[in-house]
Image 1: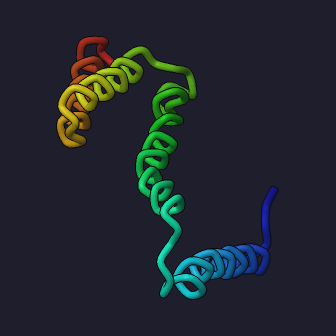
Image 2: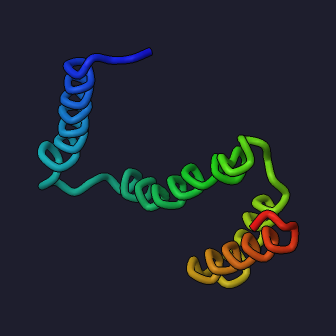
Length: 111
């Protein structure tokens, strides 16, 4: 399905307006009032939920393998989880995942 240039610009403008209204609802309408404790507690978990949501499709259905799960990428994800849980340090977890991924790709001849 192809879109005309005008349709693409209308979609971009509509998404921009929608994004502005979503941000206005938090910043403009309730930005000067304190948030309820429950909302503050839930907002603390936003980064914890967003990062796995961004990474999971890359691990389970990687484009590099045509969408087929790859044992090397799964092992790198598991290693990242283990090191992150053990050290409680994001940088160590990411580093362990990267090292595991590249070592696994090199050992299997995919690098």
